[in-house]
Structure formats: C-alpha cells, structure tokens
Amino acid sequence: MAQLVKDMTQGKVTPLLIKFMMPMLLGNLFQQLYNIADSAIVGQHEGANALGAIGCTGSLTFLFFSFCNGLASGAGIIVAQHFGAGNEKEVKKTLANSFYIVVLSGVLLSVLGLVLARPILELLQTPQVQLQDAVDYMHIICGGTIAVAVYNYAAQTMRALGDSKTPLIFLIIATVINIALDILFVVCLGMGVKGAAWATIIAQSIAAVASLFYGVAKNPYFQLKREHLRLDYQIFVLCFQVGMPLGVQSMLIAVSCVVLQRFVNAFDEAVVSAFTVTSRVEQLVQQPFNSLGMAIANFTGQNMGAGKSKRVRTALKKSAWIVAGISVTMLLVCYLGGNLVVSCFVKEAEVIAIGTTGLKITSLMFFPLGLIYITRGLLNGANDTFYAMINGAIEVCGRIGFSFLLVTFFSIGLWSVWLATGLTWTITGIAGLIRYRQGKWLEMTITNQTAEGKQAADKILKASEGEIEG
Image (cartoon, rainbow, N blue to C red; front, side, top):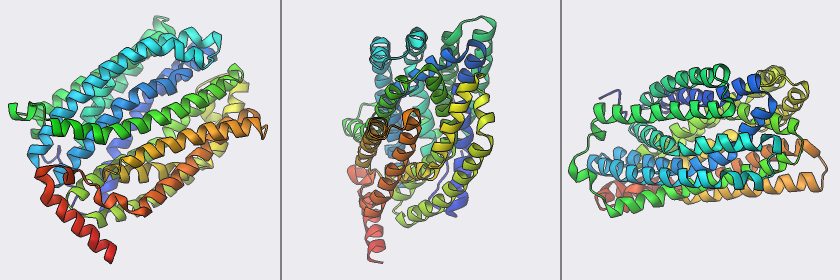
C-alpha cells in the first residue's frame, strides 16, 4: 500500500519532486520510444518519404488523443485534491465517473479519426508521394484511441495518488513489445508504415489493459463498491468542468501544430522529413519538462487539497532551477552533436543538414519551453483550468502568427518554421508566469465545489489569505 499511495503534503519539497518525477521521466522517455522506434526503423528501412508520411500525421493524431488526455488529467486533479483532503469516498466516486467519461470520449474520437483522416490530410496539402502512407498510418493509430484514453486514465489517477512507478513498469513492457513488433512488421514482413502503426497500437493496448487491471487488483482506492460505481451527476459534471479546458488546451495546441505542419508541407519533401526528425528530437527534449510539470501538478493538487499553498510556491521556485539546468545541457547537446542526432533517423545528407540547423534554432528557447510546463502544471493542479484554454489560444496565435509573418514579410524561408516554434514557446512561457503571479489559483481548489470538501476548502482559503497578508 505504501508503494501505491504517496502523501506529498509532508516532507522536503525538492526530494519529493525529483523522486516523483524520475519514474514519470523514464515513463515518458519510454513512451517517446514508440515514436522514435517508428521513425528510426521506418526511416532507415523505408526511406525519408515514408518517415515524412508518419511525421505528417503527428499533429493530427495528437489532436485526437489530446481531448481524452485532457479528461484523464482532469480526473487526476480531482483525485489528487480529494486525496490531499483525506476524502476517500470522493476519490473512489471520481475514479468511477471519470472512467465512464474517458471511455466514451475515446470511442467517439476513434470514429472521428477514421472518418476525417484523409480529408484533413488533403486539406493540409500533404505531399502526394506521402499521402496514402499518411492516411493508412492515421487510420490505424486513431482506431486505437480508446487504448490511449484508458492508459492515460489509469496513469493519471495512479499518479494523483502518489504512485508514479506502476505506470512506468507497464510502459517499459509495452515499449519492448513495440520495438520487437516494429522489427517484425516493418523489417521482416515488409508492412511499411502500416506495420509501425499496428506495432504502436498493440503495445499501447497492452499498457492500458495491464495497468488498469493491476490497479484494481492491488490499489485499495481502485477497489470500488456498488455505491461508488453509480453515476453521480455532480462528479460527472465536475470532471467535464475540470477536464474539458485541459482537453481544449491540448486540442488548440494540436491545431497550432497542424497549421504549422501546413506551412512545412509547402516546402519540399526534404524539409518535411527534416521537420519530422527535429519534432521527434524536441519531443524527447521536452520529456524532463513534461515529467516535472506532471510532478508539480500532482504535488499542487495534494497540497492545495490540504491547504498548503506555501509549499506550492516553493515547488515552483525549485523547479525553475531544475529547468535551467536541463535547458543548458540540451542546448550544448544540440549545438555540439546535433548532426549525429539527426543522422540517427535519416541517411540523406540534405535532410541531415536542414535538421541540424533547425535544432540549433529551437534549442536557444528551451528554457521558456520548460517554464510552460512547470507553470501549467501548477495552475492545472490548483484547478485554474480556465488558463489552460488561454494557454492553448496563445500557442495557436503564436504558431500561426509567427509562421505567417516570418514567411510573408521577413522572407526567412524554410527556417521560419523552426523560429516560429521557438518564439511561440517564449511568449507562452511568459504568459504562464504572469498568470501565476496574479494569484487566482490560490482559491480555485476542487474541494470548494463539493459538499464534502467544504472543511478542506475553508482551510485552503484561510491559508491563502494568511500568505497574501504576509
């Protein structure tokens, strides 16, 4: 039980964050191996055009996955705050009702992905030599959205209870299976991008089912009675209220990436392939930031549920120093070894040269990228989810606006797509700091919205008022 539940309202902040962050970091890195395995094996075995076909679908598949992930993240916030307030009954009711929502959304989005794949890819002017492979890949991946939804639900709620290790175990197992199936389907059986897609979906399905069943078997909070399984209108609506802005945020970010992909597709196949490679590398770089952001979100949820906002402020300050260290390290890697990194994905000299320069551009703005994750994590954990939509809107405006301005008025050419990405990170990171400084997150805790959480909410407000006066 002690390994499956962790109270983060007590103890030193930095060790707690790092200890909680590390399993998630490893998990995120293994999860990125899904994409890296697809990209490296397909790129080396099938060529740059096949790799570009997979890259063209990245923003779109994220668009369909993001809504389910937002709902799962919302469930995690509610669970964390009720757990921090010591309200076991509300935790279990939330686990049941949020599961219904996540499964339903996963099924609906699977259908939408299957129907809309080709029209959207054609609208984005995907190169004809890559179009059919891109459609095939997206059909298979989107058809498995339900698996992604269920795994994210299990992982987010386990982490909300302080268990960041169990999701890691199942991700490692699934990653090994994914890579083995990539080799079997793509290299041995010659299934091309379809084989890569099937390998990913099968592996994700295994992670989803295994983690969920393990949680029910081992974690007392997942062992629900009939009273917990009843549909609770108040909790059902609350899950939507918290999860919907997070889902919309992710979808807006995905839309901005889709529009940027449209700008990329206007260049030749070499640029599309290079952008695919740098996107994969940047996704890998973002994993420490993402893990730290998730750690802060769960830390914030529990501590705000317990009325300890001062510990949350301390967590953000400590995290900013961690972000700075990671940013400098990755900047050096991209400048000193970017050529070697890109060459791991493709063999074409032109693609390698473009990708290496692209990495040098975006790596200059890794620090504001890290600020996005830690401020977003804190605000989400405190239930300031309205900012999530503002955050998404900023990214949409940034990517679209900077891409248009740089291409149309400054004639920067192909480098504008990488510069637009970095500038968008910068303005979004600054916006997150401004929202944090406004302090609205101090009085938005979930427990303030449920009858059984009034006592904890009063404690939070008193603590917040005392901190403001001080």
